[in-house]
Image (cartoon, rainbow, N blue to C red):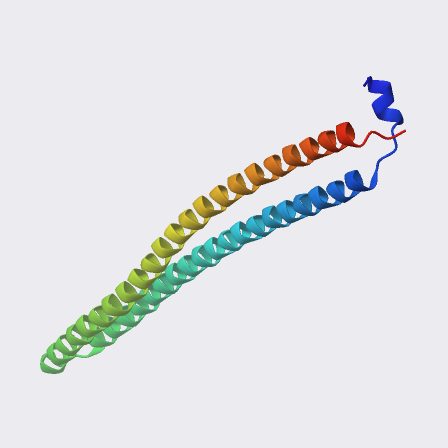
Length: 167
């Protein structure tokens, strides 16, 4: 059959049904691709949240250090104005103890927050890697199936044309 004869042939019912069937698979394939892209966008959003959380924790740490430094400087100035050596030594000792307690509490709270944030970040990275690998494999499998369906459909159409020639 020449190329012109093929163009002039009217599509038969089987071809229309098969084309609809293939188009449904193509639509499903497109939907799966869009869903995969949305999933990956979610990971990008999570990364942004983690980054902003890390920045917020850093700012809080800086502000805490600034306030602590101001408090310490004010207390030292107050101690210097006291002329009584015994009271001055007692306040210095008390200030050192408060500072040690403050550093311990800060170390515990900062390190636990940082450890949790690091753990969450590592988990998110690993989950993203696994999801990307799964989506890539799913996309490959979906493309393979779609290609095979298209080949099968063309084969069925060709067989149908040979068995049932149209006028």
